[in-house]
Amino acid sequence: MDGQIRRSAYEVALAQYDEAVALMNLPDDVVEFMRYPKRELTVNFPVRMDNGHIRMFTGFRVHHTTVRGPTKGGIRYHPEVTLEETRALAMWMTWKCALMNLPYGGAKGGVIVDPYTLSDEELCRLTRRYATEISILMSPEGDIPAPDVGTNPQVMAWIMDTYSMHRGYSVPAVVTGKPVQIGGSHGRYDATGLGVMFMAREAMKRLNMPIQGATVAVQGFGNVGSFAAHYMHLQGAKVIAVSDVRGGIYNPHGLDIPALERYVKETRTVVGFPGADAITNAELLELPCDVLIPAALEGQITRENAPRVKARIIAEGANGPTTPNADKILQDKGVFVIPDILCNAGGVTVSYFEWVQSLQSFFWSEQDVKRQLERLMVDSFNAVMHEAETRKLPLRMAAYTVAIGRVAEAIILRGVYP
Image (spheres, rainbow, N blue to C red):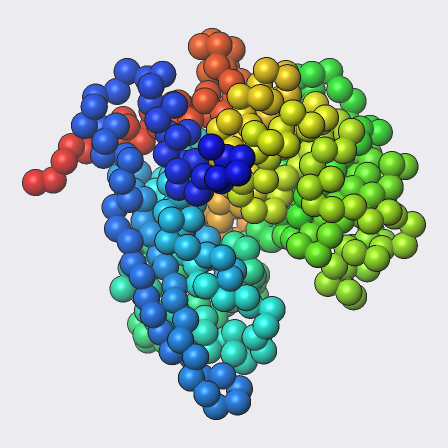
């Protein structure tokens, strides 16, 4: 069904959930409980443009569950944001937080907008109005937003300031991913990409593949993909291809990643980088390589292109980049797929560190942050591998059964109010 009629992200999330709970011995009512988001908020709000005209925008905030703690999840600014996608991302955040053993439930938010078409002033006004609209759900104890596609530390700073103005005092713990100067954490900005490298490295150890000289292709050169490429390059891997929304570049002998980072800073795209051939995003996914890192949007590897994927390892930097039908094809081919809820959990893990630091007003060094991140991610990787080997499960299902089991246990222990 993901070929010509592509499943929605929420249909994929539910399909993965149903497949996992079928492997578990959970009460039917608990299984039903976890299928539904706890609450969903849709807001329609006005923003004054620089030309003086008022333009209406639509945004969302979804909480999947609160049984393990406050909800945690990013805010996405993208023209294709939908309530269904937001619902799926909130559910995936629940499993990701549980898998990393963080005291959070999953949330996600978004605004239907192309942020690159707005001036900084317009983006600031949009952010402050959206933050005001969803502030009925936000709090350090209840719901803590973070950056996602199309948002960044500056957007988080505006959200924190808006919330703080409403409260009458500064509340840094209400968001994570904010600048260090106002209570953010060292190591947060590159945490997701760094975590992807940690997981790819651990997978390569399992397969007895040296990381030195290994070939890597990265789809998406935003916050996650650029840092994943950066850290793989630092480990001695050969990044042969990268792409962004405008297209991709390829050099079988390896790209000069530091030079590419400078080029992207100047041009805002990888397209046209000297010494590389132009390729499409679709072609990048099918390149011969040791490690493929899909770090763009969901639904990229499908039943149609999965048979042509040649990578030995897929490290899912994006949320939901592989459809369930593609999963089965990759499994039959023997591809080592590191599932998204494990592979890209570095961001939410360091967000947790940031939240703790903001609550305590006691801050860690970047070395401490990265050391703790590596420890937690390697521990989670080993837990998933143990589950997979003990129960003879694919890695995705192993990750899901561990995560879902932890949420189910919390539901059973807490009971149902009243």
